Image (cartoon, rainbow, N blue to C red; front, side, top):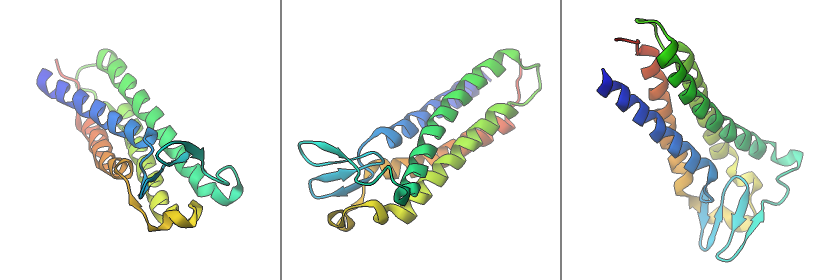
Length: 161
């Protein structure tokens, strides 16, 4: 049981690290010497705010930003709730609250990455339309099934001796 518990904790921490990398890194979109993420576009020397990112025309960008921040918060809260439930639950009970938090986190990453996939060309300069997805975007999509699986594992997991 201790080995399973350690693997679940390691899986949760790994998915949280991937979610933080996807949210923080500046490589959601790549074109020549330029990179673009949810907050900035950068060239080889400097980073600049995304033009018009604070306007209502870029509401989808703000939605992606909000869901990515929310999923990082939910993933961290889920881990702490799991640790609390580990010591507070009675024998045989399930980690349902932790599972719900993890499943909400998985829903947020799916929503954010899906909106970015659908709307990414609308808030970029014309020069960026020729680029391709960067590794942080791929990491966000890899973190989605990991977070979903983590939530499902917590749902099935029961506290034992």
